[in-house]
Length: 83
Image (cartoon, rainbow, N blue to C red):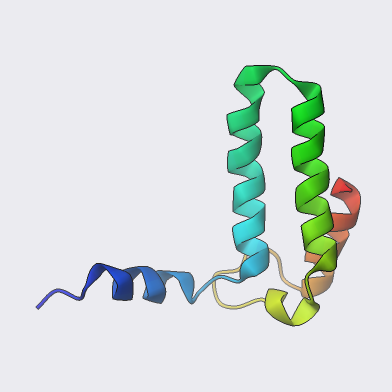
């Protein structure tokens, strides 16, 4: 029997943390902003993601099995570079 779609999504997302979701949204948002050719909008997007990464507590960014980065300090460092 197939699992309901929400259970499949939940089991997939358990391998990632908030920092991974923000990094993915940064990349997808930047790709979405590029066709507008607006450096101001790209800068606002970059600074916005950087500030959110800096404000979030490190406990929400603890690496798990499928995380992109290996420590919560690396997420904070990426956030400080973006803002």
